[in-house]
Image (cartoon, rainbow over the protein chains, first blue to last red):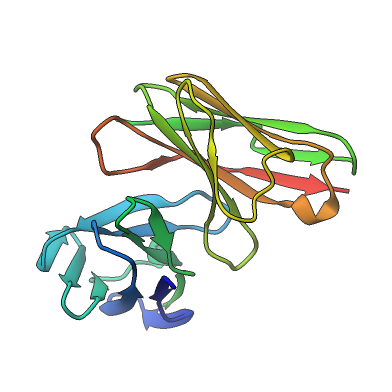
Length: 109
Length: 115
């Protein structure tokens, strides 16, 4: 079967750095996405990785290792508005998005 | 940009009635649109994929006759929940994708409550 694992919940302090991990087992791989979703709202796109390595975009970075079936999202200089759920999704061999359950990130002052 | 709208944003209906949700790509043509359902504290679950001008492809376990999807134009897809029941209460989200693009653009979602 296809599976994507992320921690259910994480807590971090304003101004700090947090890393959210995602491991996946899917039938084929055509890219990995990270989305941010605030409560009661639709997801918004954060990043896309298809090759191994680190993609940096402002305060957010995403890393991929295809051989390990592993990715992480790194958030720096955390702000209170970063409190949200972070969804990892993998596009499989049929180009279908397989979604993780999301990681709820709680930022404390 | 790539903006997707949904209407209505919230709807409350009585059990047994039907509800139509619209998904529009406002500034681009979407050859493919996706319908998702999300229950509280759970991840997105893909219900169906629709391509303009053809029948939708439903995911396993999703009833085609209950969740009617129409993608009549390159900017509009509709989801009709027929004979709604309280267990259909959920957050319904659509997304749209341009031809040859990877990213999906999500609508703001529709919260359906069936009483």
